[in-house]
Amino acid sequence: MTANDGVVVGHNADLVRQRMADDWFDHHRSSGASAVMMASRNSDVDDLNRRAHQLMADHGHLQGEPLHLDDRPFQLGDRVVCLRNDRHLNVRNGTVGNITHIDHQHRTLTIDTPDGTRRLPGEYLDDGHVRHGYAVTIHKAQGITCDHALFLGSDELYRESGYVGLSRGRESNRIYAVSTTPDPEAHIPKQLRKDREPLDVLTYALEQTRAQHLGIDHDAEPDVGAGL
Image (cartoon, rainbow, N blue to C red; front, side):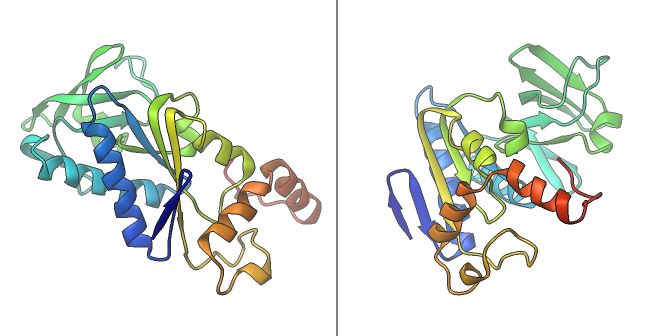
């Protein structure tokens, strides 16, 4: 694994992701520093959140018996993000906060947000509207500003999403490139789909624009299942 000028490159996905989580935690421990991890895929976000939660627990930053939601453990001190607007609860999609109280009997969480304290009832939690908030998708990262931004690269990147991921940090922005088996429908040229370096895929992906790609798709055959 190599690191240079804000880019960490490695061929082992597990090691690169753990390096990313470790770097995030090092920033987290710095006095007054805020850090956010970002990824394109929800599965990658879940994996990074799991690693971050474990680091927080291992270093004594989380307390109490966990409340499990969709097999995810939540403890006092955990950072969470809300995924659904609810005006009655005064939360919106993207509200973040730290857990300050857990009522296991009634399955509720109390979180401290930048806008004040919010109580999340069991119905909201059991419907899957809360996740750990150490890592977020690129979509949810729009509008976020932090001291240090850590971005997991993939062959699904476009110039626009790359810009979002690499412009959130005030002090530093770092991208982590992983060599993975590409999706057969990914927009990577055939000559780069075998024996390619992670940085080659990353560079090519960042050179593309989503608008151009979608325009080509539209001319050829509309993809009614595409989520924008």
